[in-house]
Image (cartoon, one colour):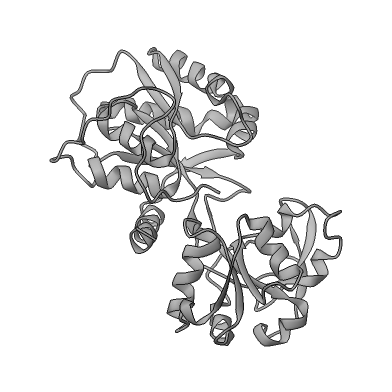
Length: 337
């Protein structure tokens, strides 16, 4: 999952001089902005480094070629150092399109009135929940009902759930649900948290724990890097409770933990957090913003392989302002941590 940026960095892939955003830019990204502007002679698409793709610009060429052909304007891809660098590029006019995480979409809108237009679709959804899980030996503490097995559609494997999260016929991963069980976490309990920049592994769980009256500093925090390792921390008994995205158990190879489906129970789901998506700069005229939005939203019908192989997704859908606002609030809460 894409992580929320917390610090500013310079663009590394190109020597782009980033100017400050216009101080009078509309933070709301109103629909009238840019409607009378000329169409640019070239468009830059900012991409974020991808651990699975070494040459991202070349791999994304089918997308940039498609946009170039349909828009009648050359579209080139560039790789920025991180999400914040992509925000700075869009706000300074050095890039007109950026594919970034939800926090960056909100940041670009707030900093210079940019337009979050699309959200990624993964496993049929444009948002995801953080799951709270424990081992089967602690299920009686956190579950109000008997754990049941349900199929996780993304990998076809069965995992344990309780508190009404799923049953044999339904497993949507839609929260919030079961969060009252967090109140049963007692002082000193070993809890596995992800990196502080991780919405699913740290930020959403902390907000839910605070809402449940649990002070995070009263817990024995077990810091873990990676959602798969968070699952394994509970599986191996290094932590009593852990947090990760729904359903991170699918990231564990069956050969690594063949009895995982019988040993780890999900007992709570957070509020839904948005996937990343696409943000457009204010230097694009409105008709072109509309055209780019339509083209990218329909790209899954043109070249689904590129979307899957590069971005690990199946499509883009219209951005939900309420979900983007949640990303904004989460980012603000944890800024500087």
